[in-house]
Length: 345
Image (cartoon, rainbow, N blue to C red; front, side, top):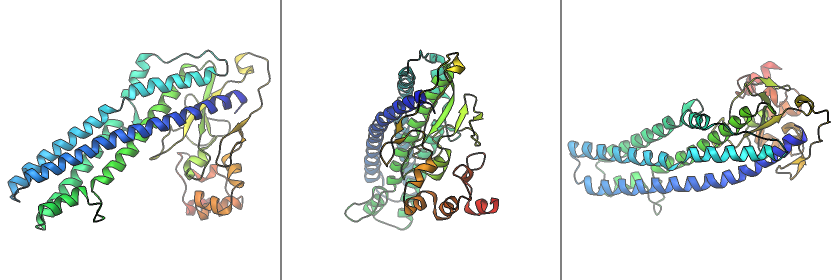
């Protein structure tokens, strides 16, 4: 990355902090909605499960199923993905403009298509929410039916569903809230990266590709660490030594990676000037040279840190220089197993 790319990456990183704060707020709003759903389901159980007759239980479960569907539909409507996309496009435009370039914005039709066609790990966002709704319905109905089958009291059945802090019994809806929180994060990150990519492609006269920007700390997974620094052109073709195929983050739940720009050099745009030298970037070691690879970053940490991040077996092979970070993945970006790595040596 040249100096201009690193300035843009710094601005993208600063915006990422704001994005994380926004994400936290959205998570809280969604959790509040699902807590209201839990309260309503509890009331339905208290008022509707007056006896355990088959017809009454069936009717109650049908009512609760509709309640769960309505709340999950409401969650999706709470997320202003179009507004988020507009903000991220503007933030990306400002980041590139900070190095003195005149940047165009994608058209409203591009924005609309991007939001409506957004895929998260290969599936539309609405399908992810539908699956979470279906999973919650299944868990709720199973808990009620099991309680009825075991002739539990109404209070015992309610405790199965909503839990009891005093008794240390978790709610079956705790998992639903955690899954929803993760999906909010991943949806926001997907829209943010899609929006940035749309701006890069709109300005192909000065932007020639994208750079995978991973967070330099111990929470980064092997897959993202190995992809750190990888670059592709705007059509997804690997460039500058990259061997993995192109994917848009997030690649997994709670992925924090971002795509930042690879600008054309001064000479590529017709200006006979040398590139500026790179500066520094943030890490859990503090500021480090901006052109530091993830491998070089890891070498500055302890063996325990390396083992924790890569796994003991991979870390030993890496320290022995039998594999590189890049060789830990196959072409598709899938982390190779330890057995596969050993077989390839």
